[in-house]
Length: 435
Image (cartoon, rainbow, N blue to C red; front, side):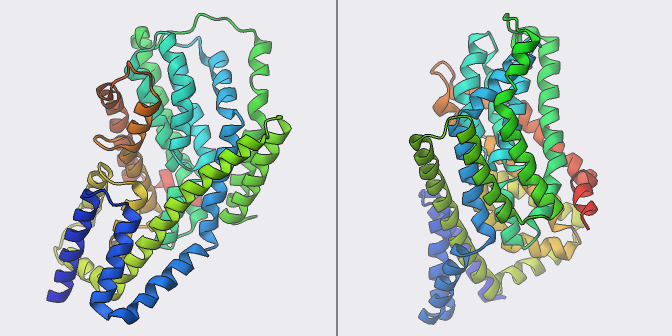
């Protein structure tokens, strides 16, 4: 055990130094995998690294990632965000807090299209935030609903984070998607309920708009979102019914997004070029993280580190729920400083064997992890969505305004996490019906 202890402590120490120095997670993990492999097996072990890179780059499951990203980018660049906000503005603007609650609903719809959080945060930050501030919404109310709503993209399927987790934990991505539906709706509803109740008690936080709209104008505002919502329904329906794998459904979604853009007359060369560039950049980042992380995972497994940690934790004799809560605390702390994809790569090789040993369902555990990663996107000091919001917000919105705005939403996310832990059927009812 002395060798395993030495390797584990050395890996943690070096990884911590590399991350503090600002090296990307994928390169830090990949570099450590190379050094660790040389130390354990010598140069002949480097063949494992190249085989890992080839295997990940050609994985059929991971093809779904660029296809879902492309689908989201095409719909975003075709002006769907403007159409959605126009509809919410006309239908719910007369309700105190209606624009903020409606913005959360838009973010949830974007989540069902995108699978990533940044799309909704950027779009609503540029469209909804100026509109709400101009109509007298309190800064923290306007900013908080966008930052928190944007994070729904990793919980409501199709979720890129779920695809990465499913690939690493070797669980069904279709079941993960099904398990994320009810918690995603629950969390969105809790956000909206909080906004509406606060604005009902204090209308100055989110005053209703002064403009009047006829029922004909309201109905007309829904025309621009019918096809995209239908596309989302078809894509998820194909997955849940078993008619298509997540990768095949992602292909349907990518083609459908192009057709929607064409039908609405927004399929321009610039939109397609921007969508392809954005997809290429984000997918390249994800793939490098995957390659580095899987190589690092193989090192841990073959060097006996994963088994050593399992024996160490199980040897403490703690109740399995205490260990589970400890894992969630580790996720929460790591989420303050690391990207969720990187956290998956760091923790999955060690935690998933423990989850199996303790008798927990890895699909259910994946939903707990995903909710925790939602908190990571909005938790100071390095919450990804908070920095996106600062980049798109007007100058009068300070970083402290953004930090204060997110506190109640983090508490709501914690409440949702506790609810799913206490009542697992919130997540597991739909997957159980597919057996």
